Image 1 (cartoon, each protein chain N blue to C red):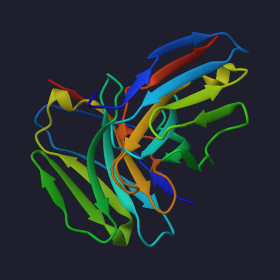
Image 2 (image 1 turned 180 degrees about the horizontal axis):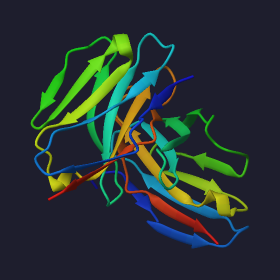
Image 3 (image 1 turned 120 degrees about the horizontal axis):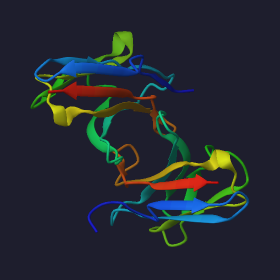
Length: 112
Length: 113
């Protein structure tokens, strides 16, 4: 069985602070894919990143960066210099040989 | 349209009624997924179609739930004898390839009174 744990239920920061969202996963599959999605108040899930289990290179996209560590089964997401528009619920998800499994999400509140 | 389209966006019904929710995926996407999201929770998998056939329906909670995709494009999720516990946002997603990213619609919010 697959499992995704996002231990942080809610995080509040002030604009321009850096923030890291944690994601820990469990799977017995040897090949798997990890994802992050953003769900703003409007409700639509927005794809952010996909990473396969053989690629442990960290990735940076603008203010977003992701740290994949297979040794600790973690796929953490960092937002640098947070902005109010970053306020949303962020979901980490895992897909092995079965379907995409989501964590419970972390609500990020960025205040001005 | 460019994205995944779901209708209706909101549906209010009474306990015991029958409901249909429709999903129109991104053109060319062969994989289609239904998820259900309750307040404060992550999306919960219901069923996955590859083409016209249901490749995995292990997430359907019981036999009141059924989904079809007769021509490999539009899909309909059908819920019989609705219960208050069925109230949730039903999300549809499509994907171009099996392990690719899923693109989600805005969801259909179902409220069972």
